[in-house]
Length: 221
Image 1 (cartoon, one colour):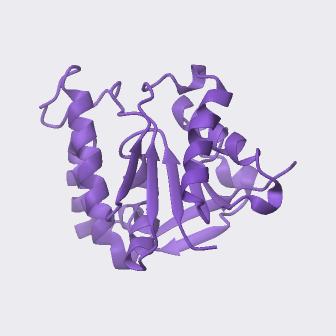
Image 2 (tube, one colour):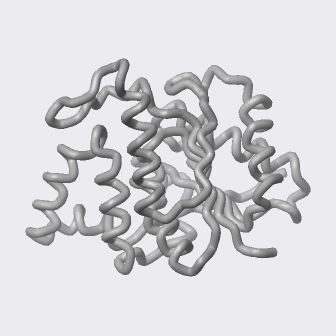
């Protein structure tokens, strides 16, 4: 199978926070990356710091930010799914799985990345991850691509164990930072503080740009 990475996440900036390093490393190797982004994050509470967006302008701003982030990561296949922010938990899972399955069939990925269902903190994260897993379960186990999941809850290691995959992203840390900066409406204030911490060698801040960790989904059917 030819390598192809498919990232399925619900909000603009989810990819920058969680997967930008892995994406950048794959693109540097010439491996195609498709990013299916569920919503425009139009119900987000952040309007810029300092303020420059409002509820009416935020969807267009976040769409442009998403496109800029994808350019920073060299993602050349961005699929905007047009779903409504903060409603994915109320969508029929079969409908969401249909949308995702169509993309899976189109790109035939060797690796899929999404949120770990039940460990995503945000309801959209959990619903997106669950729909991806549901879509993949429609295939025989032998035909399912490797699936990396991102759990966010504080008890993730206690329940799931240590991560299955740890990726050193220091060689592409600048790309991850540029992807985060592209989502200016959501990240500007936070990144100013983070850059100050990085300069002062704060271990927690530096870890963001040193490694990314993933849990491989264990099929139980």
